[in-house]
Image 1 (cartoon, rainbow, N blue to C red):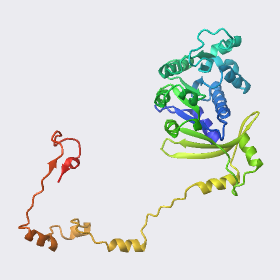
Image 2 (image 1 turned 90 degrees about the vertical axis):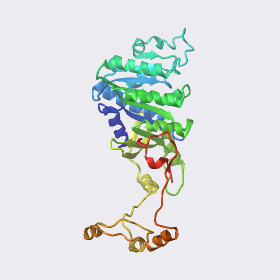
Image 3 (image 1 turned 90 degrees about the horizontal axis):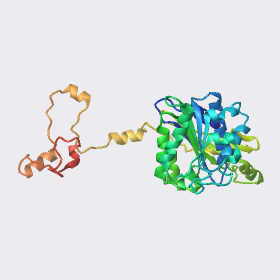
Image 4 (image 1 turned 60 degrees about the horizontal axis):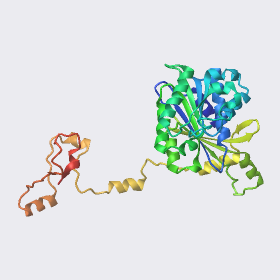
Length: 367
């Protein structure tokens, strides 16, 4: 269910006028399967784009952790029916081969793609990952080169935000993602981040920019707290897929699934009955009682207020022209002070502000 929700969201993208749908995929040392799951969602999105089942007509991959040849071979190994036409809908921005421009005059075949002409047609080498403005414009140029100018849309995938954060600050990276999401031709964007390599504020900032947050976690131990060999083996080959999906009405939907890494790919399955019980016990049970008890109503009725000049609606109808009598305590105090007259002096804190300003006048008055 969670994996299908992510696949549909990446495929459908955003509506016209909205920011692009964004997925933040987070793994850690406890569950280090972010790269296989990123490749899994990349293959699914590529299949939908190539088959025309997505509003996006192109896919731009920003490669930091793996070479472009790895991703091209990976997509070809997926058995897609349109792998021969990747040049029409797929581009790779190569930030892996020479990220800092140290190999501007390469003599080896490492940067030449090993003589693979099809790879050279798909990739563009970027040699200054510290310049995020140039990186943003180049990603958009590659996307527009696939779908053209106008209303054509394309998707973006970034295989490692953690590597990008080694060369740029958090505000710069957040601005890059925000600008890509705000572009009218970007339909979907998703990325991978290794959460345990960064401070909590980094992950929180990226979560804020996301419409979906997928967290890879270890499988929960059994109810007795026993962690045997079978549990260790399960966590060695898989884990739990925890998805937080932000809806358009502001609500957040939380989904869980187990995943297992196999040689043929990633297999998702529903949570086991034991894990479901553990998840139910972890959820807080909060009850709201909006009605007062009998004792609370009696206490409220017996509460004596010092003075309240307001009257109920029924009293106002019975006596439209009432004559209010002052409280006896107040009249005695007035007589003792030499009359019932007094003055209240208001002193403005700042004479610079006009009396008819938009601010609340009570905020700047001292009595």
